[in-house]
Image 1 (tube, helix red, strand yellow):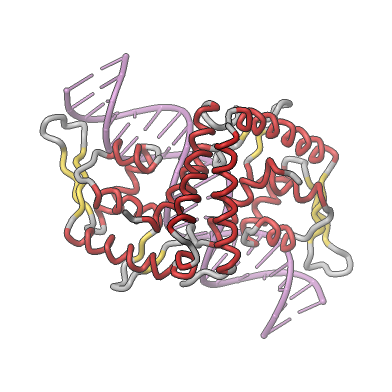
Image 2 (cartoon, each protein chain N blue to C red):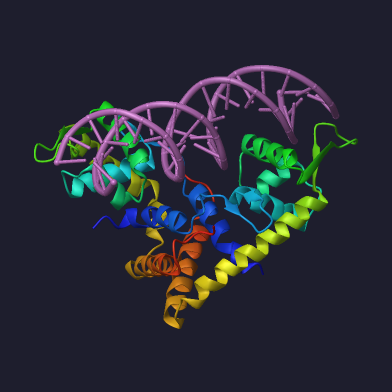
Length: 148
Length: 148
DNA sequence: CAAGATTGACGCGTCAATCTTT
DNA sequence: AAAGATTGACGCGTCAATCTTG
């Protein structure tokens, strides 16, 4: 049995069953991808951030952040101003609208999460926790760099 | 702690730290994406398969399978023949070359994740597998898995 | 019509090259 | 030169529309 393949299969399967690749429409009509929601969440926690800082937190390439942030700005959820101290940087910050959107997204997401938890038995939870704990420990012990 | 977001963050982090998003070059010079490797692995286990059957196993849309399989065929790793019994179907099967490639990929993959795998016992692996499987089953039972 | 497969338009990520600012 | 950001080309997935075969 090809045990080394299991983790990768499970990851891609999980992403699909959780619907992580599909945008979701929140009450109010706005549609958000997961990346957008995570970016707004990060900015709601601490603003302003440069695009590089945001990329570090989201684990995204600077080019991905550039396009992501441009989209958020276009929808009026975020403003960008050049840092007067160092004009290479953008200072990205949520707008009022962006803040309302991320709050509604959070609520909407929690409802889904609650339904999921309600369907789990205690044994199920134990199994999930054990699996994640093991994987996290393994990844941590190996470190962050991957091979070529 | 924002527990509802943890799963998504963890998944994307895991994918990047494991390098699952980029193709890997095996000894011999061929370059394989993860999807290609998983498809070849599936076909190595049971051939022939129709594209729909392959898509069911890989959890991919038929359109993704269509392009994926076309690429595998173009590289000479796979052959497609119309099923004479039902000419709507393709019978997809590995070639000699494809079989060699998937074997070499497996070996290389093990080395690639040597340190991670080395830190896992059989029980660890079972725990990870069980946890993910439980979570996938739970999400499925909740409905289609994603928010509308 | 239904099922299998294909194609087009698009989203979201990568890498590599480039531009501006320091 | 180095750092932050942008753009182009591409990979790999989605959905929707379409073609062929049954």
